[in-house]
Length: 114
Image (cartoon, rainbow, N blue to C red):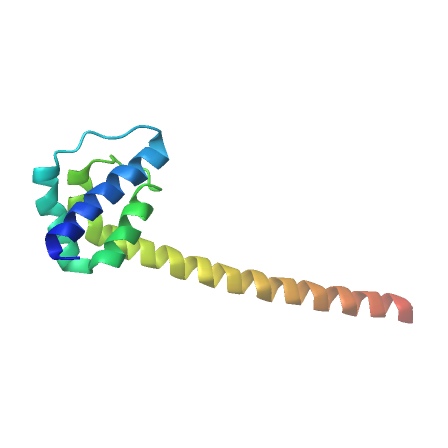
C-alpha cells in the first residue's frame, strides 16, 4: 500500500473502531482527517498507528480525530507504560502466589511437628 492508501485505511480503521466501541459511525471529514492520519503514519508507522487507534477507543477521552492527532504521542507513551505495568504486575502476582504456597507448606509442616 502506498502512503495515501495507508492514510485512508487508518481513517477506515478509526471509523470501524469507533463504531465497535460506541455502536454508531462518527461523522469524519475524510479530506481533512487524511492529513492528520498521514502525520501519525509518518511519526509511528502503520502498524503502530493501528494499535494506537484501538487503544485510543478504550480510553476515557473526547473521541474525535482532532483529539487523537493532538494526543497520539502521549497516548503511545501511556500505552507502553500500561503494558509494562501489566507485565510487572503479572510477575508480582506470580511471585506472591509462590510465596503463599511456600508459606502454606511451611505452616502445614510446622503443625504436623506439634
